[in-house]
Structure formats: structure tokens, C-alpha cells
Image (cartoon, rainbow, N blue to C red; front, side):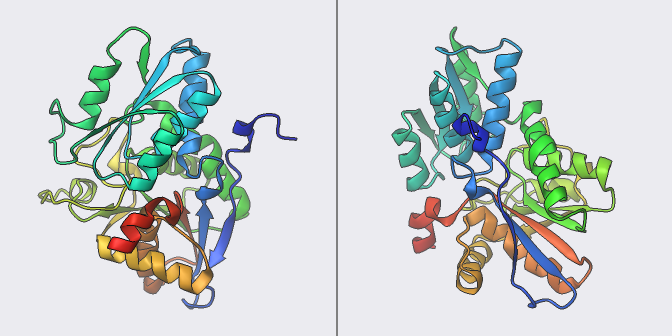
Length: 308
């Protein structure tokens, strides 16, 4: 029996897709949109809030502050409100209209800054969150430095996948935004199934791909939300990632449409980027069973999906 709405976070479905399209390769997708807040970030928000409470860093009545492109903010907003906190979310102008409306619907105070602000500058969304939280009664959760971010995936997402696949998987493909998903999955599978490869996707223009392969970073804007970065978060370690593939906005949007047509599965933009890379990897024929992480659904990006 579920005694609290937060108890329904996790245990999301994992289904096979694009059956028989690639000889010798099976593709699976884990649908994190089935979490009550609609994304994989429910896991992170719950872990961060619960652990901060456990270590007496926060208590109901305080104001929780988070910097996010949207989904972590949604998770913090609904779980925070449910637990008796005020919530302020600092985001940037890449956020979709749908996610922005949802944050406001959840009674979060939302501060929007420019996505073109350089990392470390006073108008960058992370620096603005730090400054806003530097007041008594406010607490900055900071997914980019919090160990609880990757722990959420180490203790829940990864073992769920291993159990659902009955140990029969060869590679996992995920995005890198804050780095929590990739780091939690990589740590778990290094310990429990070291033969499993962790493959990440990175939007063209982001820093992770050139950082991994010691290339010059050609910074350029991208529209895919929730993945990519213009700085390297403290919790991220490139050595935990086996491969990183770059993907364009157009490849991501095309993959979203194709999966809906072929399998009736509605996925968001970062999921589309993951699927675009998954099909490239599947064509290579290196892996028999590939699991793709789908962070959320397309309903959060309708305004972007129709415009791109």
C-alpha cells in the first residue's frame, strides 16, 4: 500500500521498442515520465530533501532554492510544497512554456535569467540561486554539487534497471545535465556489473563532449533542455563515462516524432537526443541489449516540438 504520494516515485516501466528493427540488438526505454511529478528528477528532489532533513540542514517552513532548467525545479516544487516548504526556482530562458507554467502552478517563486550569461557571472542562473539563498531561512539544494543527486540513481534507478533486465544488459544510454544520472548509474554498474557500458549524449555546443575527448570547446546555443552544460559540475567525473556522442536539436526532435509514430511512445527532447544516439549505436551492432533513459515526456515541450 502507498501511504504517501512520494512513495510512488520510482519503479517506472521499462519497455522494448523498435522491435526487430536492428538485427541482433534489442532497444529498451525506461519511462521516467511515470513518476508522479512527470520526470526522473522526482527521484533527485526527494533524495535531496529527505537527506537534508535527516542531517538537520532544513526543516518545514524554510525556503528551498534550486537552480534548474526545469524538471528538478518541478520535483522540488511539488515535493517541497507537500512537505511544508516555500520554494524558489532560478532558471533560464531556455525553459519551455509548459514547464514554466507548471512551476507557477505548483506555487513556486520563479526567477528567470538569460541562458547566454557566462558560467560564473552574476547573471548566470546558478550564481543567482546562490545569491538569493544567502539569506537566513533559505537553503540552496544545489543539484550540481550535492552527493544526494547521484545517490538517487545509485540507490533506485540503477538497481531497478538491473532487476527489470534480469541482469541481461550490455549498455545504458543517458543524458548529462547536472551529471547525477550518469554518475549514479555508472557507479552502480561498475560495482555490480562492470561489463555494462555507460554511454552519454551531449548537445552540439555543450562542454561535455570536448571535455571528455580533450578537444577545444566550440560553444554554441542548443535548444534541448535538461542536458548539456557550459561548465563541469563538481559531482561529474568524465572517467566514469565510456563514450559520449554529440547530437543536434534536429536529430533529437526527429527521434521524438519517429518513436511516437513507430511505438506510440511520447518522449521529451532530451529523450529524443538519447534515442537518436541509441539508434546510431544499435546500427553498429556492438551491444545486444541497450537500455535508454527517458527523463520525461513530450507534453512538457509541445511549444518547442511544434516550432522546431
